[in-house]
Length: 173
Image (cartoon, rainbow, N blue to C red; front, top):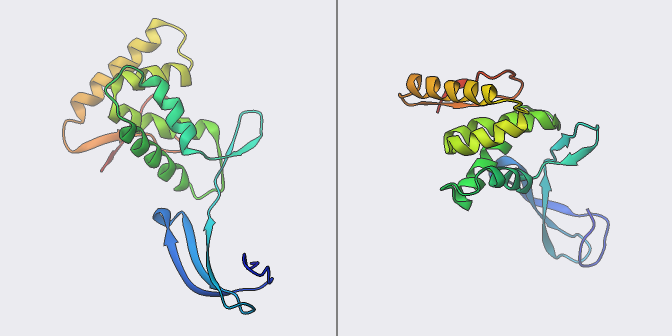
């Protein structure tokens, strides 16, 4: 690591701490040449593999912007969107892979969005799952109703990475 002050090509690590909920490491360093101290942050990268095979960095902002469109006109705050994006990022990072297919990011969005706002969930799901008819909406609405009745206790639904089909996975909070 080069010193940002004198450009010396070595530094001594004085302190190391986890940051950003464990998604990065903050290191306090000292230059042996000039004696000045500086901090570095090492972030754990997560790449999303698009359908065309191109890898792009995971972005909470992209999640928020996509979900924001589905939430237009709904009683959803920016804080709600930020919390949803954080939940999605936590879910995709739990896959323990540095690269994740874009469709799995979409699956990770569905569960938290369903909990946040059912109308926004239907809007997002209709685009994400390419609904082609009214019957697709009817099936999804029936699924929402049946899960609402069966999950009136303290559990909620959330999408898990690697699951497929229309049936969400129910997990305790």
